Length: 117
Length: 111
Image (tube, rainbow over all chains, first blue to last red; front, side, top):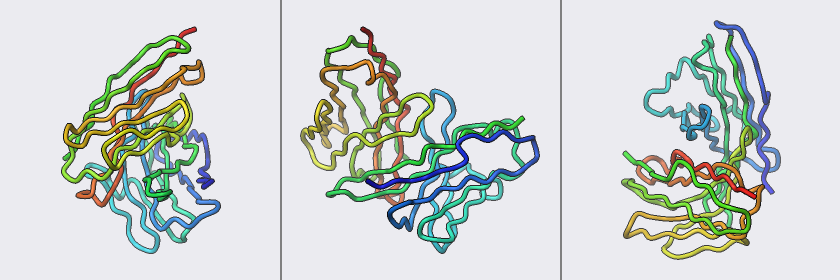
């Protein structure tokens, strides 16, 4: 089946630094990927839609200059958290959509747990 | 906008049947999905309903009634490993067919 690889799985950084998270589709091409954010025991909140070869579209309230998304190829999307602060500590998960037999299926990466000190 | 409502927690015993309900409000409904997420893990796809009725996949079934904006996930023959969070999610045609998730239901399966 389709696999989405995401890394790093965990990252700890100092406040003010930037962190890059990579999301790769391993055995399929993904023209669109989605980035979600999840706080403990809460839902997945859609942050932005990453579009290959064009600008990402951000959800309301998500700072595009804070969360830089690049989708330079059909198999790679990156999320960079710039000038990270403790409140950015969260679980970030990428996903790609597959249409399987008419079903709308999101395949998720394993997630990246960011801790900002 | 859209919203989804599902119970925050459900507890059941091993071997039992449990139903997790989900009601939704959305401008451009384009399908209801269910995902399972274990603590610390990524969500995994369980089921999808675009049309009214019941979809069965092994021990898991999902139901949709578009006229009632309602669906449910049915888990049969519960096992301890089913303890996880379950999210309903809708795809919204008015928002670029993005998938929006409910708050999740934590299922605790007891021996």
